[in-house]
Image (cartoon, rainbow, N blue to C red; front, side, top):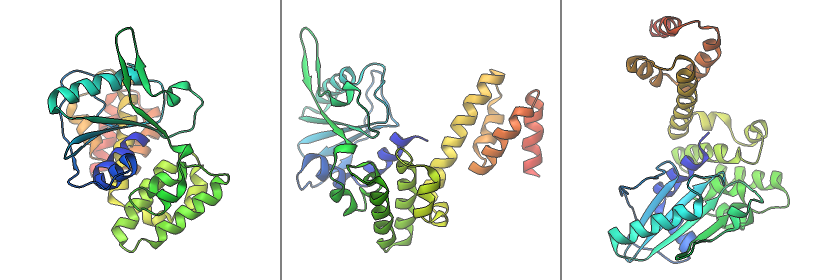
Length: 269
C-alpha cells in the first residue's frame, strides 16, 4: 500500500490544516500548487506544494529513508528550483511516517564543499497525539504519533472517527486511517476497532486499494511476460480490487498470455 500517497491526498484535501500544523500560523489563501519541475526527480506520489501569500510550503512524506538521490540532496534541489520559479521563501518539511533509528530521519541539512541547505524533519512517532486526535483532517496520522500504549491510542482514534457527523467524511477518514495504521498495527486489530463496512463504503479508500492492487499485479505481469498488449493491461486496470486479487492467485496457473485473455473474457460474460 502506498502510505506516502495517502498522506499526499490528505494534504491536498486539507491544505489549511496541514499549513497550520507545520508552519504554526493561522494561514489564509492556501492553495495546492500544481507545479511542473522540469528536472528529475519529481516524486509526484509523495510530494505536495502549498502556496501561501508569501511562501511555498513543500511537504514530502517518507515511509522509508532510502532514496535516490538521498533525501538531503533532493530537498536542496527542490528548494533551488522552487525559488527560481516563484521568487519567494520556501519552507520544506520531510515527514517520516514509520519509526526508525536511521540517521537520515534525524538529519535536517544538506552540506557539501560549497553549499549548506536547511530543511525540517518531522518524525511522526515524536508528535503529540492530541493535535491529531482533535482534528479530523489530521486524524488518520494519529495512530503513528507518540504513545506509551499504541493499542489505547488506536482505540481513541476509533472513538474520534465514530464522532464525525458527516457519513461520507467518516467513511473516508476511516479508510485513510486503516491504511496508515497499517504501518504500526496488524490488520486484524485495526479491523476490530474500525467498522469494516464503513471502510468498504469509502469511495476514495476503495479507489486507493484498487490502484495499489493493479500496480502490484502489473509488475508481476510484466516480470513474467515482458511485453503485454496495452489493451489487455487496460482491461485489467478496469477490474475492481477483489477481482485483481483473485486474478493474482489464478495467474500462478497460467502458462501463457492466452490464459489471461481467456480469464478476462470469462469475467466479462
